[in-house]
Length: 302
Image (cartoon, rainbow, N blue to C red; front, side):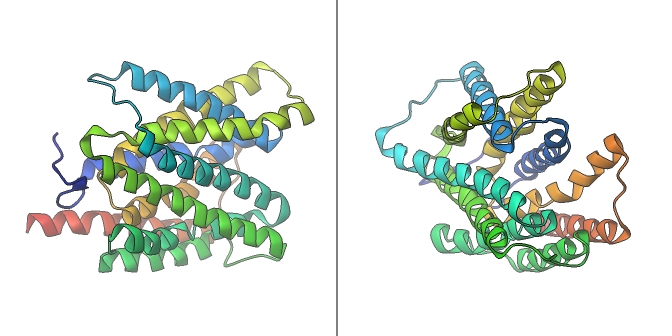
């Protein structure tokens, strides 16, 4: 399917193929909670190892993809560096926040990201959110409230602030990636910027390998390989595809499916059942995402 461009900007509304790519990406992201729990390594070692494998996977995918390979221009390096820093900051802030405050606090505050993305995308990209997206943002917030037992738990103020900062940097990731896709048009690939970001994240984790020696069991290696190749690597490729066709706010709304599906994998694998509030909250979030995704498509057909 061809997607028209005009001066680096996508014409028209996003197609369902872009939304589908982001949705599949969110499903892969959602498996991180289960597999991180299955690996007995320091969190920064997990982050660095999976990013290293993801960078190798994306480099191979880029090399094997058909068509001419566009070289990264010198003028694109600031965007690559900015995204790499935002991505590394998101991972590091979130991991650190989880060690300093309640897990529910960390996830709820990070997943305020769709609101930050809506504001940043509106300001920097002139992508004004539609009314249904504003409604969906409010419903996602309500759903998060239910999912995590009705609100924030007692935790560290520092940890809560780090979690909130990780949400801002998560939104910044998406805005920078979208801006890069719009500026470079059909000749550019957001995958380049994702490869660079994974390399930065992997390099940042190197000192932790000396501070916290790893246990190289077959179990740990297989879990890290899955996370690097599929949960982060393939997910990054899908997100790079989707963000070229989906506005920032909608991409972040769809990605909010991740914390809903995350406990489902844990339940299936480890037998931990979600609470009634979590099921209700998850239903609200799914309904909000479907509403904000389907309504624009119906509007275009009318």
